[in-house]
Amino acid sequence: MIRKISAKSAFAATALAACAVVAPARAQDADAPAAALEAAAADGLPSVPQEVKPFTALVRCARAKGVVLVLKPGASDWAAAEEGRYYPLGTSFRTAPEQDQPASAEFAFGPMSYVRLTGAAEVATKAIAIGDPARTVVLKSGRVMVNVPRTLKEGLFFVAAPYFTCSNLAGESLFDYKPLGDGDEVVVRCVTGSLALEGRHYKIPRMVAANQVRIRSTGDDLYSWLRGERGDSKVFLDQGLMTEKNFETGEEKDVQKTYEFSLSPRCAVKIFRRRSPVGGNMLVSMMATDATGVIKTRCAYAEGRSNVNSGELVIAPVVATNAEKEKAKAASEETEEVEAVEVKPAKAPAKKEVAEAGPPQEEEKKDDEKKENKSDDDDI
Image 1 (cartoon, helix red, strand yellow):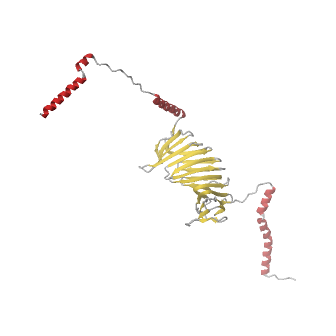
Image 2 (image 1 turned 90 degrees about the vertical axis):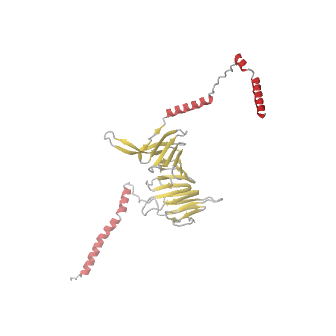
Image 3 (image 1 turned 120 degrees about the horizontal axis):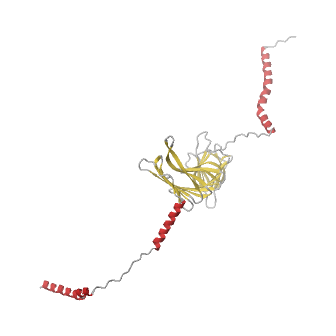
């Protein structure tokens, strides 16, 4: 007996057969990554972990003790911070201790990145463009501790102030920031890991664990003072443009010069700036002193002008020592030197001169008598 199969039944049967063939293949493709990972683990090969983003889109208040305030973008009044709540970038955070109640707070930027405020402190977060992976914390006042993973890529986290910026932070860093009436002063300490610090006309490419420097700047940015307090940090100081000539080709070109100085404890760098009345170029004068206060090098130049540059003026140790000795010797000679004055006896007058001169008292009497007689005649 022969049955007639319709076109619809034939199409349905064909579709079922195709599904039966394709379904195992797709299941096999879906299980391929897991199977590959299992095979790699069986072979002793390391598995590839999923990439974890270092920061979250918002900042979370992880802990708040005492009076902790937040100022959201666009708001005019400070509000109390709430633990566990997320705040947008651009928000400012402040801790305000009272008489009997200390204050501290911790704000998480990611799974392993956070900023801690202690005492009377304040920071601000910088708003970013959509898709920007970097985060920036702006110092306002007080003690701020920053902790980020040591494996954090460069250029992802910054700590900024009006006159300097810290970048490439890895590990734990501590900042004591103090605004002043004519500028600010900050103590930067690298507790663990490393960081880089850069300001106008100076740069510290790398501070490592236990390194600490103090920076003082004026409000108009016309003076900067750096002082080493712990460890040994290498600071690179700008020395302006200098002309270099290629003796083979005779070509001349301006090259930016820098001076490397070891900022050890009690060593200091002073940078003076002034705007030129003619041309408007910034005039810069720099000097570096050792732990005893002796000037090791100095330089003066105009920004963007290679023809206005004193170059590096190094004071040789031998010359400086001899100069100090000569100065001390001259000072001692001035204090000990006594001017000798020769005293000569007065020469007695000759007898002839005495006889001719006569007794001085008799001459005075004769003169007085003449004056009296003349006055009497005038009265008559």
